[in-house]
Each structure stands twice: as C-alpha cells, then as structure tokens.
Image (tube, rainbow, N blue to C red; front, side, top):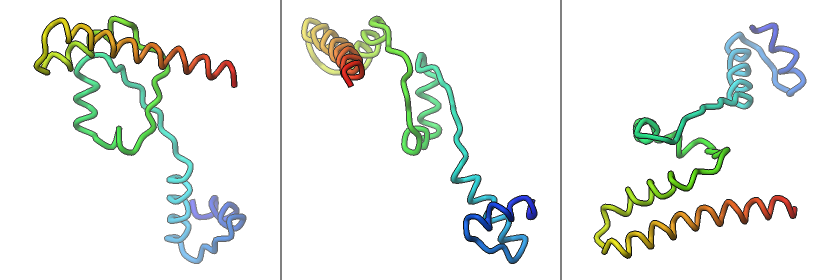
Length: 117
C-alpha cells in the first residue's frame, strides 16, 4: 500500500516519511473520493424507521427523489399527517387537496423551468 500511494502523494505535494504517513494519505484520499449510493423505497414504515435509527441519513446526505410521487401517495401521506390535527372533515379534505396540489404544481413548474433553461 505504501508504495502504491507514493506517486499520488508526490504529485499532491505530500512527503511520506513513515508507513503511518502513507496510510494517513491513503485514508484521506478514500474519505475525499468515496461516494456511496443508498436506495430506499419511501413507501411504508421501514424507511421512516431507518431514518429514525440513523439520523445522519438526513443530516449528512443528499437525498434525491428520482420519480414523482403518485397522487394517491400524496393524498395518503397528507391524510395521515393531518389526521392528528383537530379540524373538521371538510377543512381536512381541503388541506389534503392543497398539499397534493402544491406538490404536483412544484413538480410541473420544476419541469417547465428545466425545459426553459
């Protein structure tokens, strides 16, 4: 390992006097260049449980949603989270529709912005 990292260390301007220096350079390069892709399904309780168990998945990662949520999933999530808030059924239904509409309009406008750019 020490001999394999020497050329890279030399080009980076680092002097490797000991095997520990070579190992430290190798670890630094690994940290700087390692990228890990994790794929989770956002459907169900497993994703939520994992996020609670490992908060760094939210705090220290970039989350990309690659597909739009289906309308029934948006309604389901809004209904569940608004279900614990005290309001009339008529107001709750309107709020659920508003949440769904906001998400869908953001997706539509994002697509338009991307096509115009």
